[in-house]
Amino acid sequence: MGLLQLCQTAGPAHVMDLLDWLVPPAALDDARLRTRHRGIAKALLTISLVVSIMLLAVAFVRGGMGVAFILFFLACIVTPLIGAVLIRLTGNIGLGLVVANVGGLAIVTAWAFMSGGILSVALPAYLANIALLSTFGNVGLLIGFGVALGAALVLLYLATITGWLPASIFLAGETPGLMLTAMLGSLAIVVLAGYFLARDRALVKVRLREARHAAEQSSRAKAVFLRSMSQEFRAPLGAILGEATNLQVRLPADAAEQQSLQGIVTAGNYLGDLLNQLLEVSRAEADETLLRIEPVPVSQIVAPCLAIVGPEAVRREVVVEDICGELAERKVWADRVLVRQVVLNLLTNAVKFNRPQGRVSVSCKPGSAGFLRIVVTDSGPGISRDVQAELFAPFSSMGLEQGGVQGGGLGLVMSKRLIERMRGHIGVESIVGLGSSFWIDLPLAESVGP
Image 1 (spheres, rainbow, N blue to C red):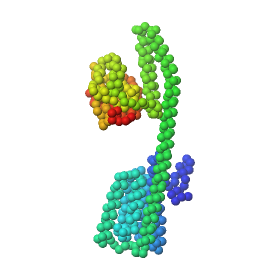
Image 2 (spheres, rainbow, N blue to C red):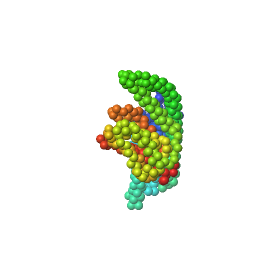
Image 3 (cartoon, rainbow, N blue to C red):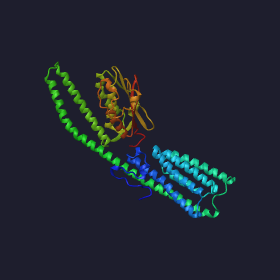
Image 4 (cartoon, helix red, strand yellow):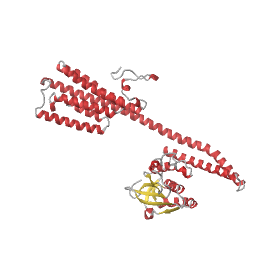
């Protein structure tokens, strides 16, 4: 039975050891947080344990110890425990570390003030404290404590050279043994606490790798499942659409059933499109969408998309124009096919969600350093700021269903993932009542390698 354990965790009864008692209840069910809190608890308990051993060593060197010394060492032992208990009660690691380290700073400074000032045998405890603090990864706390420690050292120096110090509580002959005890104690604190934290961090990394591997496996399994099921869906869906189309042909054009059949065809086509988008998203999540990155002139991206969207724009009485100008001849690093898919998706949305006699324009302008920006601007109703954050979230239709246009909300999700895989960026600017501008930034081929 170790000093740090009361008992082992046992089955469904969840009998907790001492370290688990020092873990906030909210962190017990999260393996990563639980491991981190246990590591911090081990480090703080190590300080108390080593100081307890130092108490015995100092008593041995001095041949005994008065009540004042015992109380002083008890304060050193209890302070880290208070920090550990605060972390457990509040769940705030920073608060517990501040209390433990500020308390330790005050105790060591008082010890040094009474035992030789800047020449005190207590000074190694300072370095142990700050070395231990550096392992927790809290940069703000480390810098703040470093400044406080520097101020304490300057104060001790001034007190020493000006003679403000009281008579040392140690005899001259005790100094070598006490210095050895202080150095060994500080060394033990740093090594043991660092060992516990390093071991627990390694355990956290292992768990993170396992979780990542499991997530990747799940994503691949989902992609395989969707591809397999798509064949099962497509067969009956194709049969339904085929029969509905045949009935449309056989029935008179003015038959009342024509409207119902057209609804079946429209819904079936929508389901087919949604299924295709789901498959593309699953492939992107599983990194199974192969990219062929090459220098592509912007004109070869924009012009084919305008040609495709042109008939739909005419039908909806929306004017579409290309105002890229000379920048259309610049080359960007991209997958020629997939970047067209993204731009076509933006143009299709701009036309579908526009107002009658509206306008859509495609423009180009320099982006951030080494990037070219392609902007698709429409004169539609615009998108309010509070829903813009949902634009690139899966299955969000952005409230546009109010416009009478159905959508699975997957087009922009796919666009974002494809552009990011091409090392680009995508975003939106919109003003309600005036329209929206969707933009993509792609690396310029003249300045960035593939």
